[in-house]
Amino acid sequence: MLIFHNPIHHLHAGRQEMFRGKLVPCHESPARLEFVLQALRQRGIGELRAPSPADMALLGRVHSPRYLDFLQGAWREWIALDPANAELDVLPSVWPVRGFRHDVTPANFAARVGLYSFDSGSPLTAGTWDAALAGAACAIDAARAVGGAGGPRAAMALTRPPGHHAGPDFFGGYCFLNNAALAAQALREAGAARVAVLDIDYHHGNGTQTIFYERGDVLTMSVHGDPLTEYPFFLGHADERGAGAGEDCNLNLPLAAGTGYAGWREALRAGMRAVQDFRADALVIALGVDTIEGDPISKFKLASADYRQVGRDLATLGLPAVFTMEGGYAVEEVGTNVANVLEGYGG
Image 1 (cartoon, rainbow, N blue to C red):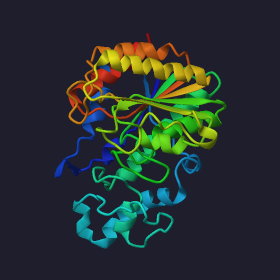
Image 2: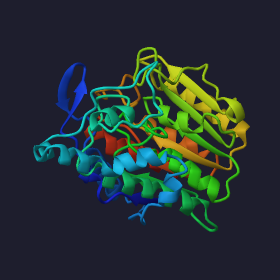
Image 3: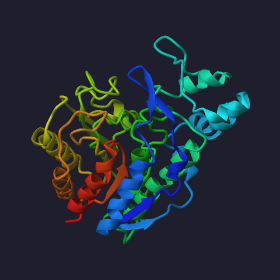
Image 4: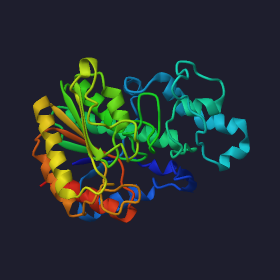
């Protein structure tokens, strides 16, 4: 398996996030990816490659131009407000909720941070844009490798910050650019008529759903914690089936907090049947391993050994596949769990 690794992921390292009413150290940290790299190297899994420069034109077909412009220049604007801001991260403090206008781009920086975000737990730092852009390049390169003639059957974008919460013009949930969506778009442009995105992170991939909700060429499927009680709360319900050309091309399988492996695997199999019924030509797997019991911000009860079977199950779909690295915050176990999935997938 080819593994496109983001060599500058560490440039995005938030100091604090708002969590349950307090500023706390960020759960999403550079250590997460280093544990995965260590586990893959110890087991001899995959061939590591650095990405090529990101295809900005493709990014512009997934994310809106004004959003990309904002992300690219946000840190410069933050420092221009006050040089002392270099010691602080950017966190939003105001949002345009129901009844407010979203079509107007405010001149005020704080207002634009709120316009392009949906939570206060995703700090934007000096290196966020560069790290996220290199991660997007990993996803695009992985998709093009898999989609090209004579390419591998599977590749991975091993990167952070993660991506599946990022929408066409918003960030949140630690995500800024949607790597799974970029991989799906790249697979489409490489010749796959139908692409399925199968999201197995504990948290619903609200950004991916939003991006493809009215498209019939990409199936979005997610197994996740029930949004009645679990983040991101406002998307991920079972009655969200797609709209317009995308009607019946979105499948959400929400599960109660505390669900164990048997119940989770049953939902996964239902999602896999949907991928088969869709007659997908290629697959993107948004791989979150925050489904492990004991993850600090998640509530499923999978064990590390279960992830090998997860990989075996996914392999039975027999499709060219791109893995994107999403959540997993029980840091010491993240590497083991990702390696187990890939090991199981590879047989």
